[in-house]
Image 1 (spheres, rainbow, N blue to C red):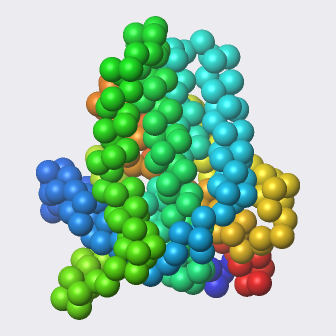
Image 2 (image 1 turned 60 degrees about the vertical axis):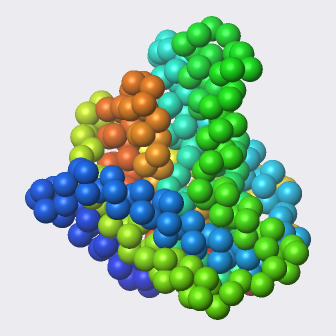
Image 3 (image 1 turned 45 degrees about the vertical axis):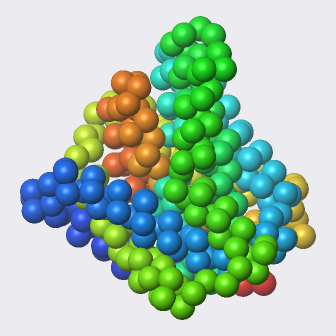
Length: 312
């Protein structure tokens, strides 16, 4: 584990630098928001486009891997839902807590870290995990919050969900990349160089943005936040591991990558949703802060455990 900890240290160091910059005011909240937009809409999208454009859909698409990840994630989602229901909180709050317990920072942290540590072959499985998170659970939280508030679900209420999926730059960039790959469309040299330049900024930009955004997070509602962080960092990778052993015992590499992806700390975009809908933002904020800090230890531990699987 010590070797993996050393390998992951630069990632968490950049996150720490971002946190210090945000905490000291050197990097304002407005600056963090714009950096996040740059990474989300330009740098990370360019990286994902280049990844998918150099792969074929047949190489990447593994429905058994998707099923294993969804089964494991759904199990954690249901556990968090059951605990929230036992506390008799609202459906909207329950949906947010379940999302916190089961959805990790795969885009900003998982993709750059796992593709570097586990090799280029990890790109495909990580993109499948990211797509499952965005399409399935990213839609589910909006649907449940709407259902909890309006007590009914209309076609009009589903329009923002569909619009969000169709305009999500990560989904669009992956789809366009596979489209280019499927039709063998050439990417002109200057365009490819521009995408490479933007993509190179994705990893440091995303990590710094994570740290700077943590500076604005508060550690309130600690008991609930600790429970949700434990779900995300411990229960989620365990559940995905169990599902992978059941559904894809013959695909150890994909299983190992999915387990490592499940070990990522709480996704930052959940806080944006919680703020937008005004549902438990303090709980989400504390969970992101605690899980990201604890992931300095837990993520290397999980990656060390799955190393024999991905090593072949």
